[in-house]
Amino acid sequence: MIAAAGADRPRERNPERSRERLLDAALTEFAEHGFAGARVGAIADRAGLNKQLISHHFGGKRGLYESVMRERRLRGGGELTTAPTSAGETVAGFFGRAGSDPEWIRVLLWEALDERDDEEISALGERRERYQDRIEWIREEQAAGRLPADLEADLLLLSLFGAALYPVLLPDVCEILTGDRPDQPAFADRYRDHLIRLVSHLGD
Picture 1 (tube, rainbow, N blue to C red):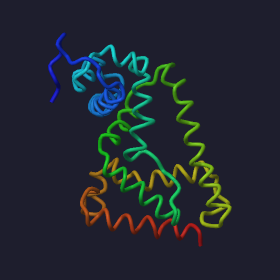
Picture 2 (spheres, rainbow, N blue to C red):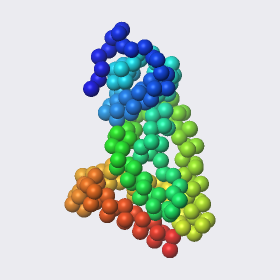
Picture 3 (cartoon, one colour):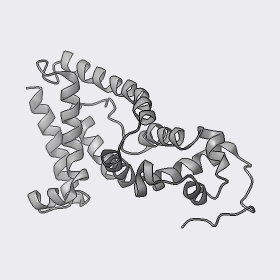
Picture 4 (cartoon, rainbow, N blue to C red):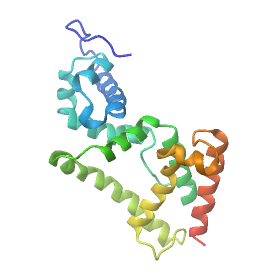
């Protein structure tokens, strides 16, 4: 529930805690309204803090959004990271993490719907750099013979992202095709096993 705004809002006693509260509140606001529709005042109200703290900690709404996409993705579903076992386990883990973080999924959908301005396009540079790490991981898997070496690494990464995310992004299509929703445990177990076997076949 959104806290009431007003001059009696508590002062910032713990800057790090305030920052975390703003990030949590911003994730919810961006998930519900997208970047364009989100309001700084509403984020501050959700956090129970003064909206001036958004400028203080993040430099404004754009900086707050980029911090959400950078930091909350790591905690939730938004990163494909190297696994100690196999590429298939990594992709299956990505599916599991995405399914457990519906707010992050809604933020991604809003990104697809919102029109980008010049500032937002410029801000994508940092995220591109992070994805370069994922492309390098793909190349390492290719060099080790665990993924096909004749496929372009960036396109292969995009394909693996798509395989992991499609049921979560389009749950109705998932249900039409399989009879199950992606958040049902039976489907999640089945699809996770499918992803592991699918990626293992790529390395055959």
